[in-house]
Image (cartoon, rainbow, N blue to C red; front, side, top):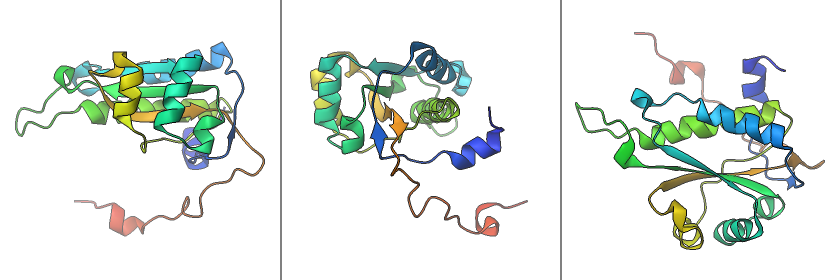
Length: 173
């Protein structure tokens, strides 16, 4: 187990994945990391789908036809329901997608800690996925996480370590 900062720096969007069955104990730890994510007012306005059956995987691959999605045997989908989220009373800001992003982030770090790799897929046809999997209709689908192992040629993008200067990103007031 790595220290948190090392894990956070090591994790990258891996787009060269090989599939294979995800061991149940690993999957359960990843799901637990998502389920224990903090949400605004603890409303938990999210749903996680484990997509590993042939029909579900076919639907994902039709909605997100990328080699790194097509290579895997398990994809996690995360959706949020704004109707059940906390809304900031001062300006009406709905926190559903913020909460969902926390869930996805915790799962991405957990899977990396377990030796798996993934990428946050946001470029997919949500309507196509919902048409094939109608249980998802009431949710805003925010992410797909294809679960697999990095291939030998996998490496971080050339932009992975590019960061704006700290002074531009952090202010002490």
